[in-house]
Image 1 (spheres, rainbow, N blue to C red):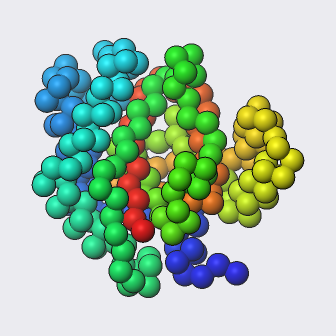
Image 2 (cartoon, rainbow, N blue to C red; image 1 turned 60 degrees about the vertical axis):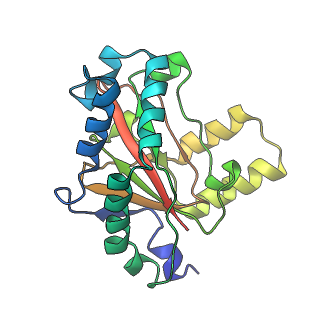
Length: 213
């Protein structure tokens, strides 16, 4: 049985005050320092090459160490996180990870394969706050699955030594798209399998991963 530290992060939606915590506006301003031609996040793919997009992502992620972002996210975390973890003490990841999912990203090798946090070194005590800065829907959003199915597939993947093709196939059969708007975050923890399908929508999805421990 899940305890409250898990229940509150088991594929839950967090609605936050977008006027108070306008992460999209902050990211847009930081992007414009290097790429002033970007006026809409949804149209990044029309202006930048995949190589330039990588540079954009790194610039935003490095900028998460700036005082203004750290203060904004610390305030956000202090307002929304304590009730989700029984008011226990927690730590905040130093830098967020910016995700830019362009249309047909698989063609240029940018599709994020299915995985769970433990695969990439995140401890089981980590909790992820996934925050889209554009509308996230259908094929351009994160796809995720329920906890029990995630555990079953992970167990079989390890025990039966599945190759990546079989693992992806099983994940795709069981995953579903997270539909969110700016002002909403998706909460999950490290055992949830998640990834991307090919973006068949006609606009770029931009999101940020932040984590607490």
